[in-house]
Length: 403
Image: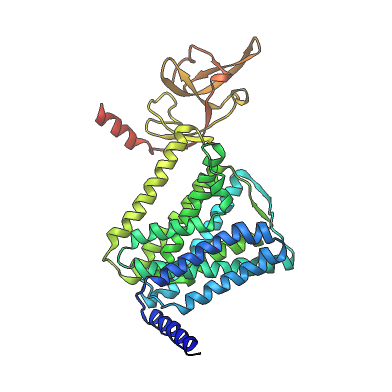
């Protein structure tokens, strides 16, 4: 009995000592282990093994409820943002969510919409929202705790580490295990992983400034509107990647700018500008690679000669839409190779056919005579759909400077 009493007293003393030490790293390890365990259980046990209503709904709700309870038991942390800015940050979170939704609508406008795969019955909606909601609250409480526990003085490092960690544990395990060096994996990285990282960075930024509430509002609004919508975008992976990355970048810039102005913060701005610069550089790099690979069916081209004046002048940028040459018509301004490495944009003035091959006679609007050589349909690389005046002047200046 005395041994039992001694053991109980010893455990109680250790527990009190643990709870009293607010700076102990044990809290962090407990939280990280719980998050990783929840990820494994969700992806390997609950759904795949148990299945049904119990495995897909009841057990995840209980698990995330336990994690939320643990987070409320461990020491609280102070958010980096000013308390008076809490309301502003919540509104900014909602605005960022609607920017993301607008990006999804643009994806649908580009590639069309398809029927939503989610259950839209009242029971299905309530069950899914309850399960996703409790998981979302648990994730964002943990995110806000971690980012504000360790990275208040190193926000950029914290954003990177925490955002990557939560991207990993919110991406289904089968996505990671199915990665290989093929087109499907490239599409996963572009259409799923890159937008997820962007959203995670923005969510972590909101959590660092305003705690879990702005983060929950941002991600929760996106999830809610996605689940309630009867249709979802059915666009190609290139547009999903572009718009999926662009929306969080716009959100980060918006939050940073408005928060800095409202809070009148000047200190530490250089560090935050660094992450924005890297994100913008990454986006520009992706665009350059895609244009070079021909991923998009639209591409810009700077006009270097005056053969198409007055409609198209030197220094204008034209947007070329890739088309099959057989679909080109009289009056179209087409892009085609001319002589060796040169490409020109001239207008089709007549169409003929020879031995089953469609041939185009082309002419520059400012030229007195048509081009000497006929253009086979197979040589047509696209047609001009938009003209942006004077946008290519900087390119011309640069070309002259390096000659």
